[in-house]
Image 1 (cartoon, chains in turn green, cyan):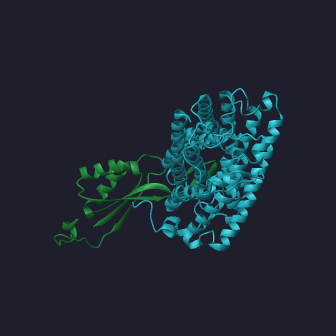
Image 2: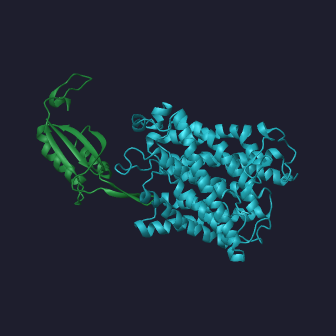
Image 3: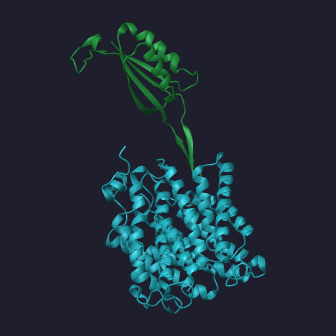
Length: 112
Length: 404
């Protein structure tokens, strides 16, 4: 199984979620994060004093899929999240050793 | 005694009371989240503590029988003799109405200072300092200007508290900022307002309450009150625009914080002038206050003191400009109990205003420094760096503002 970790723009969350559920994904975990890459932060001004804010708010979406579906899911995510501008984000793919469904005790692909 | 005047002044007293919680929110939104309760608590606790101090000793020191032009006597100690019969000299109001109206001014003035030592003062030290400040700084100032003291004798014009409230708190704030030193991380870490909608709400309450502050200082429901109400509002509006325009040019965008700060600056500046000038000069006073106070805020970066919430920049410069502007624009046509200013053929008034400015800054700054030293010896005045890092809410009050 593969873990797919997506870091992308917060406003793209709905689009990515819709695309994934249409593609058959049954669940995901979402968190609000902040970070920076090539996209610069922004400036804030309070009473004439300028502050450079380096961190940009992003959303992190985590999901686990069967190996066979990984490539298709990654394409789906890319199509939904892409704007073409710097700041679109990244997708990290890692190997998952095992998955357990807590309620039933199922493991492996049937627990995904 | 006049029923309309009495009703009006009691309402105005309530409006001015409301300014202190308004100030709590104005300041509270500008600090970091970990200090929001500590900041709000300063203003709220002052409402409690200073009201009692005023009743027991503050009122009499301010308005008791004059001693040498410097302080009032103890005739009204514990509000002795202060009842429903009018105060000699203020025939239209029950004495209690006059006293309670003045009480609200005594309350908000030390609350203004809290902006200078935000995020780093010890609560016990703050309590002791505030009590001493009301007795040894506010009461004398109040007496000098409104209680028949020497500044009144000189003919200084201060309609609603440019000197008594704004310059006094600002000079004291400067002393506090210097004595306490900068916040840990100042200049290296960004300290950004955590809740500006709260600040805007606070500013709106201040603007609203200021009508009681300035119009109520006419001490009657009459034409002068209407005049002061109008100049107050127009100065606030003009100043908000003035600040916004200067910031827009200087930094490229108009900010919400800038707009409301400008409004407050205008309200400060018009305070001494409200019942002495006409409306168009009030607009000019406001417009310039917006620009001057914007510059005033930048002063702290120039001189290197950490006046956290810009008490000096706004109340100090705004109050000073307002006091001098009164010397320019005052006209007996608005208030025959006042005087004419420079633009109405009397340059002498400007000189008297200047003296009141210097006297206020000098007395309040020096006296506050002394009080800070005394308090530091007795209770300590600055929190430990560990407490400052944890935040005042947790360290001073075992509370958290937002359980998110």
